Length: 469
Image (cartoon, rainbow, N blue to C red; front, side, top):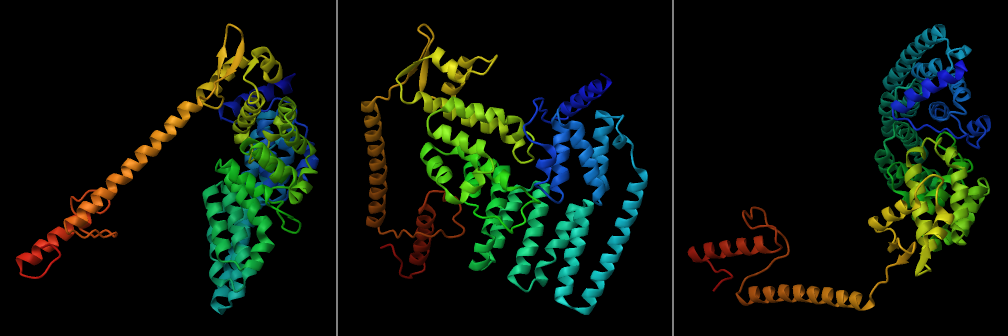
């Protein structure tokens, strides 16, 4: 009873801080889930689960503290301890380990001095490969201690001493990994393009899966769902790419399937997802994603939504998906409702409610919202309780098309007449702008005409031949 009170107080504090709280039990097994990852992302994922999942909170926080103590980042240990001391103050992990923190901090400082001294010696010897390795080792040390800014600066210094394509790729991967940890999605995408621009075609083909995955994560973080889906669907074989520090093959299947459902039409889902031989191996890792896409393509929309809702808690515990889950589910649900209604001229509200209504929520209000936003081209007949499709008048559409064409023709004709008049007046119209056209305005050619006129008048006044007679 007392532990429940602690948890309730803890999640109230988390909710006040703006964290997402997942009260339903997820389907994932925590130990099996976290075993798919390595590196610093393990702690990030465990801490997120500990701050969000009511069912897995204590286990995740205990695992996060154990993971933090395997490394050298004392700030991470403090973050996890601050959580567990509120959520489960009676657990052994809730006691702050001053000895470990003090010893780790001392060792980190000593290691930093040692690596900096080694790097200084390499620079004095002017051995490029040793300097590159020295910067890499120092950057990895800064990264492991949580000083991401210093790590990024050190990794950047590897580039001048890189003598092969493999060295350039290695430096690029280190920098991209830091940018992902910092959540700088624009920087990640820009750096991927920069690395690709300086890489030969052979290395591009070998590293394509890595670049596709990293680009997909960056595009997802930027909210560009369609482009992110394309990147994940085009990933290919990731064996030997060491992507577990970012995501797992299961994540590629989940991200690719969900983003495709939210942003692609039925034909694209069929060809890019279900018939994609390279992506099929990922879908086998997450059968529910493949089943949801199949249900949508086959027109069984309510079954598709039921499958996704069953895994909503799992998606809300993912570090990259969490903040986009409501928007993705809303897009998929709107697509399902629109596709369900498209073949009919009218459907009873009772039928729609039975197929799509959420327990305890008004489905009619959702329909009204979709109609107002233009997602659903229909109107609601509240007397007969019907959803009626708004028929498009082909005559009005044709008339609008003709009027638009006539306006475009009139505009082009006026431009041609104006140009003919200018030529008839003996004025020369040039395509490039000239500096100093003060007061000429922003219309094309006006500044040139003004300057040519002034120039010709000046030439006539001085007795030189000009273009005006």
